Amino acid sequence: MLTAEQILAAQKANVETLFGLSNKAFEGVEKLVELNVTASKAALSDVASHTQALLSVKDAQELLALQAGLIQPLAEKTAAHSRHLYDIASGHRCRVRQGF
Image 1 (cartoon, helix red, strand yellow):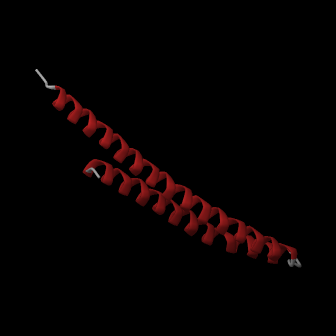
Image 2: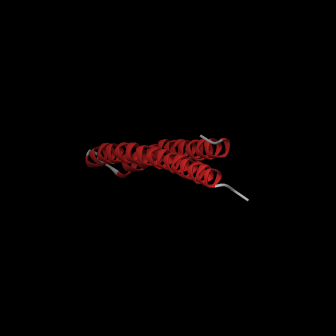
Image 3: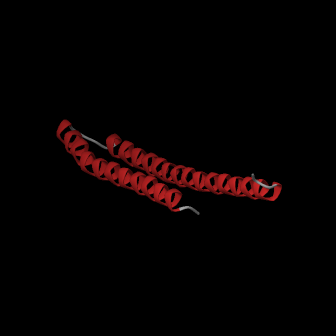
């Protein structure tokens, strides 16, 4: 039979574990929000630059070249964003599994 002290100690350990896991979860969310805010700012800047470039286009060939030049950097940025998301998710899982 468990004593009152053992029950209290177990409850205290459970509460500490809950708060520790909650803190880790918030850290992961904070990193995701930071990444997405940074990506959104960069995307907005890119759109502004691209719009300015579009406004200076003089013919269809220049427009096609501008559009073609946009594809590769966009693909690279998308891949980098995906890698950052993966790093955050995998790092977060490892810390939760290892404890706090």
